[in-house]
Image 1 (tube, rainbow, N blue to C red):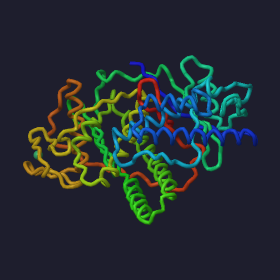
Image 2: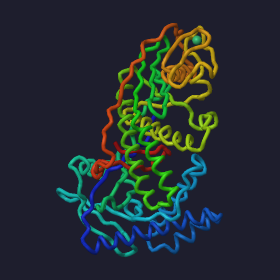
Image 3: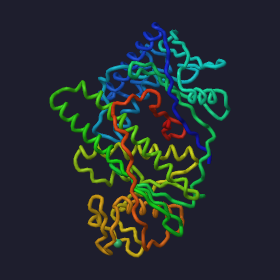
Image 4: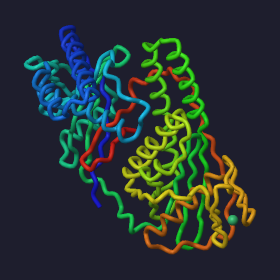
Length: 423
Ligand SMILES: [Zn+2]
């Protein structure tokens, strides 16, 4: 099966003073368009009308205005679909990224040893210069511009830590992801707030399992949550955004590392397919309890899964999903399979029927892998004993404030709807 895959390359820009002024003005205009779109959706205005009005009165290149409006409508859509806690703000401050299409809002020109850019920040007012970046990303972009199998896509100009940057999406149009029906090993993935459990299963045996712990992510999220609460209570909402971005960056960075670790584990098995729990069904079945729990839980599930799917696809490894019902409550031993909530107590699984004990998430990962085999119409092996649980602790990379200029990542959309993330 052919699938297109997108990654994002990050470059620094070198605008002169008037170029900087143009970009700054355009970022503010983009922010106004973004905020106004959000404000009007909250106001209940018709979305088509909002689109028309804002696109025609924005002081931006047409295509750029369209993309900014689209981005804010997507934020609202996402909020309605996934998260009733974090409503997008219509009073966003600071510079807002300028998104544009290749050869419309921005253009690139190959020279002997450099790549020049032209960004139409405002209508008829291009900003020009030379892209700055590592040899590696410059080479990747050059290939993307020249080669038939790559396509240069949308880019975002933005200002981060006082630097002007251009994040360019490039798409490989012929990356091969193996057909999941040709898989031999099913790797069940159970994603939790503080760890991810993996179990690989063949038709005839359980092959291996591992639990990757990442308590730092949970701790950091709790820490920021408490901080945010405290600041909100004392009315300091202006600090909020900065902390939120710090938190996002930290979590984002950690999740990238965890997903890399997961994807490194998988290819050692013969023709693997990665199996996740279906998120939509999971949302309905999770007992969220409080709003806080809900907010704390929602993010890592989705993002980590996205990162794993994407990185695996780049290696040709397909993904599949199964119905999550009872995966955490059922005893995974074949002769037992007793299913009750009482089997599980936090991280400890103890079957009330057969007495078997296990790491609760490893047990769940095995159940996910079993369901994966069923879904592919394969035999599920008789599991009479299970290997020792092996745990790996992800090393915390410590500092939250570390600069993330050159190798930070951004997301971009690709043709088949999967979100691409640079590595
Ligand atoms: Zn049992």
